[in-house]
Length: 255
Image 1: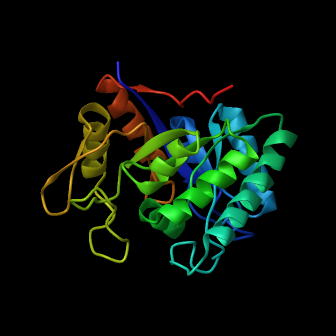
Image 2: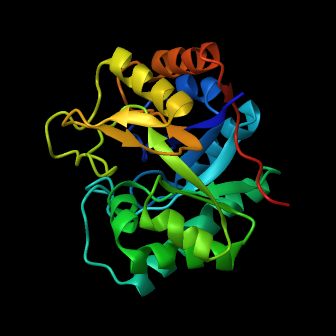
């Protein structure tokens, strides 16, 4: 039986401003990428999200970002590997404090937004992120876009890595994600998104925007918690994967 992790980016609210349906999505996923205050989230939200993960038995990951609250971490910035190393270490350490206080522990690290995409193609930035994760705790899992520079840097650093596919993002022919600034970058049709997720999990394939087939080996699939009817979509997706014979479970973190 195929096995795949189902992850979501959560804890992205800030103060009185609310983003996504964390409570509705949480029962259907197996790991969560929790915002650490740079693109979303704040100390109160981080603590509450960690507690929600612990209550549902969901693996907790640090969703490290560029420091861009106003742009929600989706704008590229001119940053050096030295800065990215320090920013990643800072955010992982912050979330780890909440995990320890809740009697649990971190499972993985996954960059967010622009940082994720930059590290997918920039080897120096990818190496900086991998080094920060390794220096903090070499047993943490590093999550990156399937086939990307970040996955390669993680392996080269001796980390356990998990290659990620996306349920509701359109791919380009080279396996990169279509930028959100372009039309059709997000699969709003739930039928399309579920079909893509099942195809990636069972056949290792997705259809690119130009109609070509993109091959990938994904260990984890991302479902976005800020899409319309996110909780209902996550439930439908989980059931579709299991109906297709896929076991949905988080990867074991090394001892």
